[in-house]
Length: 526
Ligand code: G4P
Image (tube, rainbow, N blue to C red):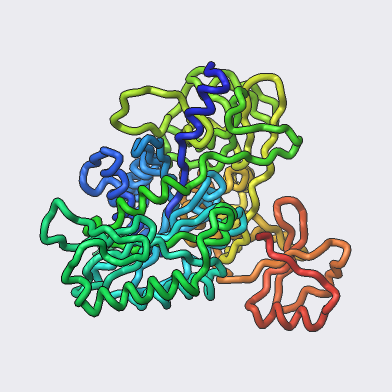
């Protein structure tokens, strides 16, 4: 086992983050560029291949195939600039599910990729809110500068207006699309040229006042002048750089560039590594003072991925290491039931090419092959001192389905399947107060499809799903609850902990309720 100071040095090097974006903003493209900087040359399209197409029901074989790939690309690790970087994938598209949210519980910072022609889009907003809730630092990359982009000033103010986070531009685009000249980089005091005349001179240095050190024809260029003027204006009237605010997720450093043509990506990565935090402490429920460099090995399960192969019922439990050093074959305790486990069948998501073999420490992710031991949020620890990490938050579902067993004679397998899949965190389960009906809740449609498929394949239980559409879930204090409050515009249900909540038809129904019962406090889980 490593001693404290060697663990400390290893932890110092870790940077663990996720990329959040709306589909098509360029997350896959930028991920591939980052891997290239890390010297990881993947077969073209490896990251890409997992992108889901259209998940029609007949495509389940496809899902299986793609799942296989996405397990290995769920965590990508590489070394760059003296750091060991872990990128945790947050699936976008139809894959959008609670998994995506939970992954954000296991990172220390997030990179927000925005299509500079489109600005902030809905899925980015949702993911951003989860990051904000955790108060983790967010770094922004405005992508696709090789295409005509929106006014950068507008993009920056959108951060504030739509997301409520201050933007601090580290660099500024000199044009975009056909007139893209480069980046006015105030942080590195240079202009990064998009198409340098001399390939060996991609940067023009700036003096302390932000003027070009050497004469250049750029000075006569209106596009350049506009960019410089904007940057000067921002330097004078914009938000000052505030490292503390960045750490708390109140200010985001903003970088511009194009992932596709690999412009500005390295500049982004270098600055990101300077400011991104190393693995932080995770709160415990039993108030153990546990620093990331503590010798005791601990971690928590933030995601469980079923392999979906009916022949091998194995699943992988993704564990974020929070302290100590993981060693293959080590003995740990599963806190929830005090079960002793030996961690021998493990996947480490290590860089493909790596000279110094090191064990996983805080910030790293290990994948445990699981035969049904683990649940989302479980703590594992080595040694005698009990550790219990704070519960992972439950996310407010937006989509709902009534579910029942097709064959009434098969209630047993139906209940067993539901129980296990809910424990695993695949979907949320609610029970209607009056009828006792089962209602499933999810943040994305794919969760339902996976549920139905797995019920059939793993539990031999055919289910009938009846879509209820979008609903607004609001919890109510049981003390304030009166069953008469339930009306045709809402459904009163119990969640997995037995806590009551209303599923409102729409925001109008919720407003109506609030007007009728002004003293009743409704909360969303977030
Ligand atoms: P995602 O993972 O966030 O969904 O986005 P992805 O990287 O797959 O990018 C979506 C599309 O945008 C892709 O084009 C990709 O090539 C393009 N793209 C990404 N970054 C840039 C950029 O900096 N500039 C420009 N011009 N395009 C960019 P596609 O046509 O949908 O896919 P493909 O057929 O090229 O693979």
